[in-house]
Length: 208
Image 1 (tube, rainbow, N blue to C red):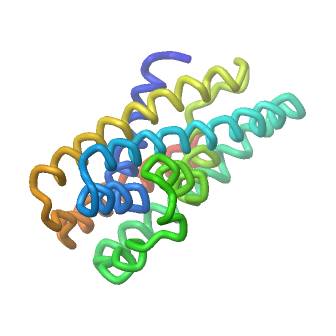
Image 2 (image 1 turned 180 degrees about the vertical axis):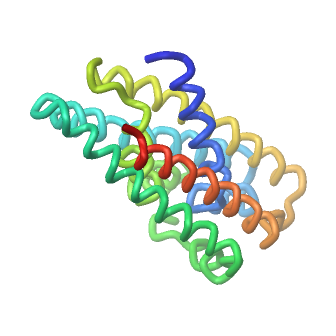
């Protein structure tokens, strides 16, 4: 895999990572309710959850490409259409703010687990994380090369982005101990992510 493909993936996945979601809420909760170390454990659990999704994707997409060289092209086109839809809905959600949804996410069903376990399962069971490897990752794969090593490289890059962001956020929350997750912040990140998704989806759907 070429370095520019990895950089392109990082540019695409970064705004998605910045959107406040289950992992973001979990880390914030762990730090406020406990300590910075609790947030760190939740962060590394989240990263391990991404590796689970990457493993499933590597097995599934590799089998798909082996059965048909054109299958990955179909996956890319379908994924591109889905990304456009996801980008539009993400942009529209910015206007609603999402305060009610954010409060609903605050109590997680695996709250009795430790920080690492919470981070792991919140990501393994997160459809948003799964969609990254089912729709976004295929846009950066080359069917003429082995799929699993390519997904592994992208997964490492994804984990790096998540670790940098959530560890930074853990430090900020630990220092501030206040509700920094404001509606304005959520709207801004949702709009950026929506624009990136629509752009990537159009590029994929119209590619020859």
